[in-house]
Length: 198
Image (cartoon, rainbow, N blue to C red; front, side):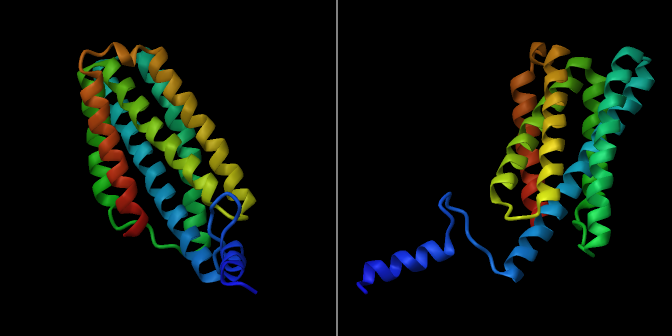
């Protein structure tokens, strides 16, 4: 057998046609734990962002926006509960950054909602657009684990609904929409990267 044929066989044994790596059992488990840890952290962050917004909206007596945000938080609670159960069932260590995400997420939600309804909605669009990309990348990388994939796809669709709600509530009309959303997206991506590893 020629060298290039040997290389070709080895390559095909290691890689899928779509470029994904076939993992051994240990690598698969490590990747699975990483996915569940970061998604648990992300849904926790979403919960506390909405909790901060709810606190500010109650303070402002903006009952109309409050009703919208409370419904989005209700869905985030369901997302978090799923990953929290997986963390416990599989004995996965949550991110050590959770206390920081709790304070930072609540503050982000509270101050954006306190500043302006459109700022709160801009926060939602920014976070949900990053989460959409994050979940799509996971769906492309996960091997097997059909229940997890189905849950992630369901949650992704609900995150997209939240993004759309933000735009329907004039998030893009905010004067400082671009700088605010760029900052929030960068912060969210940083939090995701850290939560994967520690």
